[in-house]
Length: 334
Image (cartoon, rainbow, N blue to C red; front, side, top):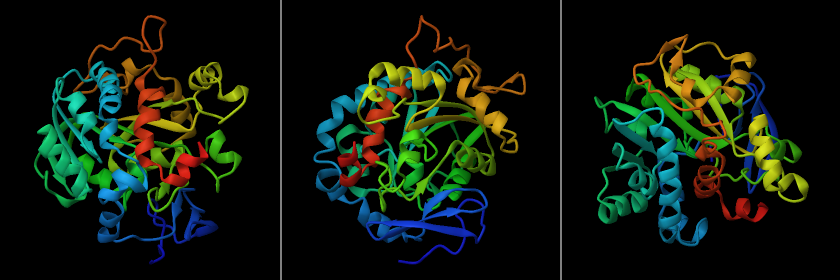
């Protein structure tokens, strides 16, 4: 294994060693604060990690058998997305076996990209979906453009998140919506014990973002952070693990997994004030930039009002899509 010479996000050579997990060194950048596995994995190594065994025994007992519940979660996610962008082309990066694409296909013209040959072949053969085997940086979709691009618990798996988001920017139109979900390394569960955090699971997870570093990543790639929604998980047992505590934590803007909404357009410098605003901005305003509607703006009801359910990211997405990213060690910590 080769160590990183510089931070994958800001390029600084000042990486602070923290600890090791299962033989993988974990480091924090002293400049931008990104926590990362201090190993530069090659493409062939990643392909070996996400072989058939990943979906059938190593991480998931039987991922394919979870189709029904994952499609249901995908339908809930699609409903939320459609309140912002009602139609058009959707790309799912890291689409696995294509269950979210299956759910989204009645609303959008869907395409997926998946590194795993096993999972992408299943999506094509069994579901009839357009899924490209490979990485979004490979250029297989060059010249195409999408109105919505999703990365459900994918960004932490990528060998180079910045290169991947730059590729996503080339595939998006001005005003396109980008939605990604990932763990929050600055959240209560990670702060309690980072080494034992349930999402600290290399080599599956290579990067551990906070709102600050995810905003920096998006800005560098040409996106503006607009909304952050949390799953509300702040403890694994006791009163703080109750459904009531989760609801309060979600409203307060804290949790273990964050779903991030961003818009392709003029990126702005990262700022604590902007991140705070993103925790409470109604989803109907996500596509409004600088007081103007983005090119794909739609009239969206306030999903936080009593008349509407809370965003899908709080429940089904966070619980189900997050699980595809967890190793046996991570699942055991839940």
